[in-house]
Image (cartoon, rainbow, N blue to C red):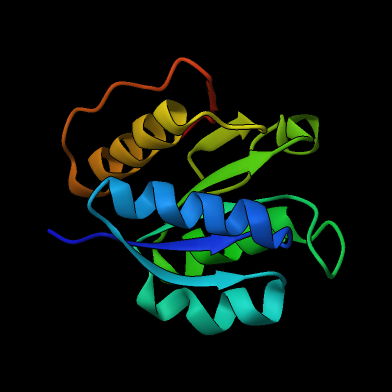
Length: 133
């Protein structure tokens, strides 16, 4: 099953790096969004989302993540330099990884998200703080 990944990141170099990592793991990118408006526009085309906390429209990442999970059923993982901003968890989302993120952590995070979406067992990435279900 081809999983489509939405990248919600306002730093274009980071977004392009994540795009390469997603594609190298055999998945396609549903879109790159730098704010809430663009994230919501791309949401219907995504299965998984990698979401930063601080975006071009402010610290909207937690709200975007909640909306993506609750309204669209997207498996959301936060990737941020500010994990403390979502340390208590965000309804419906899977967890958070501290940036900078190594390619192996992106790969593990994507496998974990696919496993959660499909009901398969998947190892929790060692660098991920998983939120309570």
